[in-house]
Length: 187
Ligand SMILES: Cc1cn([C@H]2C[C@H](O)[C@@H](COP(=O)(O)OP(=O)(O)O[C@H]3O[C@@H](C)C(=O)[C@@H](O)[C@H]3O)O2)c(=O)[nH]c1=O
Image 1 (cartoon, protein in one colour):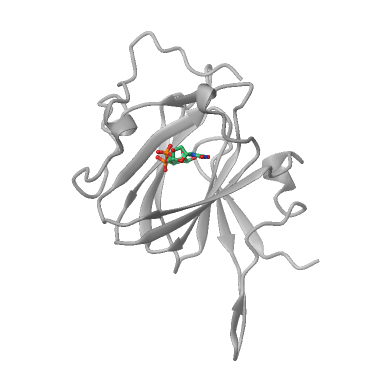
Image 2 (cartoon, helix red, strand yellow):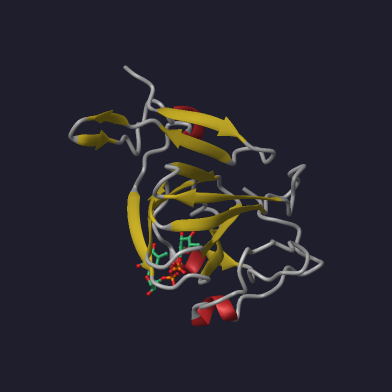
């Protein structure tokens, strides 16, 4: 089977960039978004159990930083189908050598990059254009009672959002900063 998904590690264990290699001909293109076999090194064979899509209308909007606590911890594969975002994965895993470290990069409909957010890591993004459409693949179903989150402007993380923080949801506006006593997520 042809490889269409190229995996590139980052400095954070488990945070992986997936570069899609679409097939083009005179009609247009054919673009593989997921392949259980090619992505087995990432999912460890865990099935994708939910697929979600979101639209964010305004440039500068921030969503996040969100994660789910065990037993609903999830691997999340994030794709920007339309527009451009600044996407961030934050390592919250207890005992991780990169605890509270983060990886940030631009994802867009044009660059066809996807970011893998492993279990125990938070995810957030800022839209760099209007009308950004995202697609998420999840290894765990949405479990509101297991949701965790930290404020995107957390001073300990100091994430360099490219634009002033625009629209935030009511929930995200009230997310806490990381407490000094936070020991991380135990998986
Ligand atoms: C995340 C989620 C939300 N919802 C509901 C709850 C709420 O009424 C509405 C909007 O939810 P939120 O405000 O949490 O949506 P949003 O702030 O876009 O949440 C998302 O943020 C990014 C950063 C992620 O990584 C996603 O996994 C998810 O947490 O949709 C679901 O039904 N299923 C879901 O999986």
